[in-house]
Length: 350
Image (tube, rainbow, N blue to C red):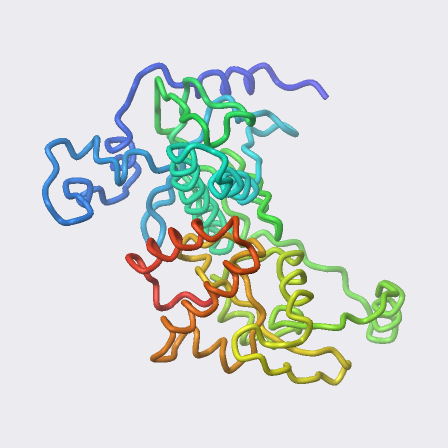
């Protein structure tokens, strides 16, 4: 397929040639930057634009403000007559986690990887919410020296130039594994969903039966394995996508026994044992979607972990359990918990 020359020109023109300050570009996009003038302890900073609590971030805004993401010009490409940005920031965060928990790596490398993993997850969270809410995204496009895959966590990329694209982008696809596709100049498609072809009641049941895979029923189920009624699905629109493989691994590890209280989960009508999967460090607070951050616990302990007066005690108990099962992740869990305690979102369900 021949790509129109003007599309090549558009992509080339997006490459920045001036070093705009990230604070100014974020403000131009409509995000409140008043907090840049203060440190995390509340004291004023001399140069707000250089405040490290903000200036090194990859994602800004959201939660009612415009969504702004920093992306490398070299990561943009042309596909099917569109300028697109594709990837999987969740996978990138997991790669950084591996660098951060490897005790053979120097401490400065592990610390850098942990910070970068947190930035990657905030980037992923903003993308995911923009997709679920059909919100547009603004890109701050970067040019300079991005690091290769082999240098992940070991070195920081160097930005030479930045610019705010004056055209909005839309997250047209976000999948359960975290892979995404963002397209330039396309409006959010919430109002343009194609209608499914009508199928008569007599044939629909037959078609569903024929299309159903022939596999043995699972031995263990969690809250995401059982279809919710429409009203509950609507109330969970802002929830985070979770890896099915991670959930299944946690359920298999628990083998039907609550990893908090030690009691067996209840048996469902299908014969499977039911427990609920729970991220000890919640996804909305930067917790990774990996086995060493997910437990399988009974519904009662799951609610206590979120809403009980002893929720911190339960969190500590589950941390000890996971650290004993995954010693290499012990330090990472402690750091995640420390940052979670400072910015805890009590409305988060994980």
